[in-house]
Figure 1: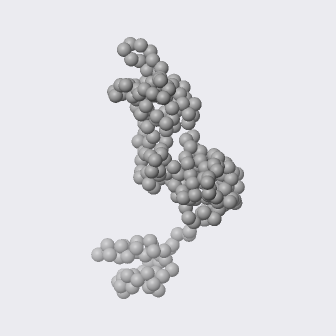
Figure 2: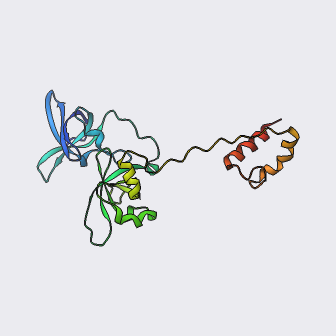
Figure 3: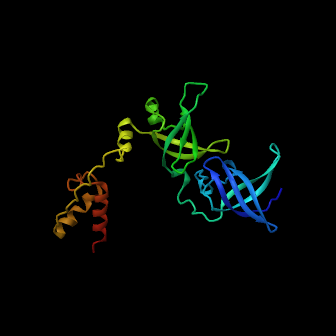
Length: 231
């Protein structure tokens, strides 16, 4: 079928499943089927940017031999905010949508992202530090995770961190998963005579110096740089 791209508008779409695109070709109004699997995912596997009715999209037409029809493929939004950042560093919160049975006694299932897409996860996708919490994980629980591409080319959850029951209960009440620690009191540095500063400059090279051992490392660095900039 046509290798060229056509422009159209999403007419209707059932989230995470399928929908229709309206477009004009040779002066005729056309309507073509597409599904979530034929949407071009962004760098972190999201396809929901093409789920909203009225979204301008670009696509190709391809014949589905098994069904004897033509579908829209490589569907992607014409206007889209680019993903900012390193996909490998991306982290987000999703909820456990459902569990699936496996041939071995290992945890596996699908997460539901905030944007609506589903992500597979298995035992190997869980951060080793949280594998001991597998038995406390319930359907509907939030998890903190990254996203990676599987060998089969599909996106899946990665480095999954499992919240404790106490953290999940706090989040259900609209609170932070952990109580935030109060900001530390600002460190007040008493002014020193010029001679005393000069005498202590050598000792600032050690974080164990008596004058600095109780200060945060960043404060020691700031004081050292300040002295080196002094005339």
